[in-house]
Length: 333
Image (cartoon, rainbow, N blue to C red; front, top):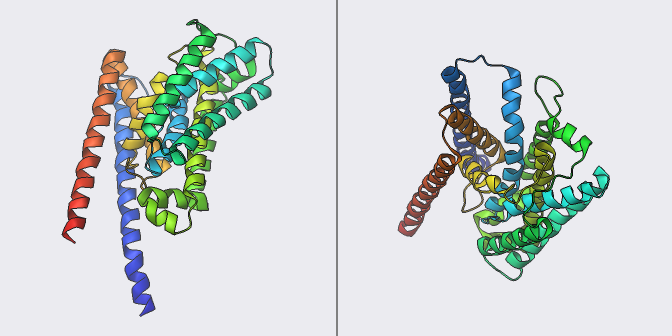
């Protein structure tokens, strides 16, 4: 009897995992087709150097998308990540200009990112302000502070070791930024699937009431999620500073909507409780490969932003339809 019960409980889990694997494989095929089509259209030859060059650009979006994924898993969102990237990049640039060593700058900027996330998490989980409203407000505050510090002038303070790490070719075009992305990706995957904190995020995103009744510290989980998200945005800010060697007021803007798009494209539900970083990483690669393809057709940045908006809209409509259908089925039951 117990064996039959165990089999019946295992079947839905196995079916869900099989479905997720199929979706991931489809995403991988799309990513490969998009990437290879660039070589076909330009009559160029594939090389590992070209692949790693694309991965270097993807690494920055991949890191910030990892943090955004955490907020989606608990049914939230962080609209301040772009401004966190800009602000921490500016702070890092100013500190480097004063001759501060790399380790000190890294510690200060990462702690700053963590603090920003803690403030977001506090107002979202304890004061109960909606995540979008709170993080938009935080983004506006950071944008204003960035403008005060820079006075609208691009900051160019940098560190040679940081620039080498972000840009220097280790071999076949591989850079430190790509290796960092791989390390963060592995760490994120382990958190999601091997730690209690990861399981609590999925439970909280699936059903907050059940999570609370199950003994999950909801406030604590939300606080940590937004702290991780902003800290990863700060990491991106420093890496972008090393890559571009300067920090402008709009440096982080190009990572906000693409980060959200990559998370949705990777199969993470905006309603929470569903998704993983494997799909998000492939989603990041698809967006960067698509951007690379658009460059072949000489499309402008405006065209690119329109396309990103359309992608976001399509996925939001799809999830709304899926949610409505699920709610309708539950009402019938």
